[in-house]
Length: 92
Ligand SMILES: [Zn+2]
Image (cartoon, rainbow, N blue to C red):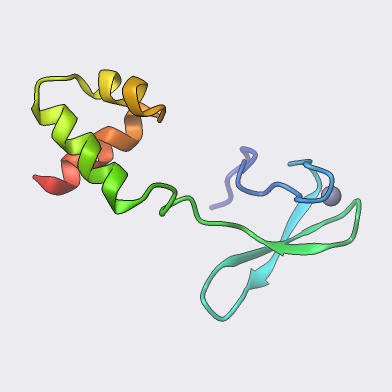
């Protein structure tokens, strides 16, 4: 089934547009490759998985278990609270 919503990961590094981006396959490491119809350049989508370091993650968990809410941790570390909750979930 195809998703009709715009995938924000598909963003042209050249013109910054998320429209007119087409998927052209995967590279050897399994990263999605896309092409901008406007500029005709192809690029790989950066997976957002490893956006934060292990240290940041551990710090977030530590702060969380010291009694701060997930939202609070997100505020302190300047990240989305969803990140924090993801980490907590994985630790349990
Ligand atoms: Zn472009």
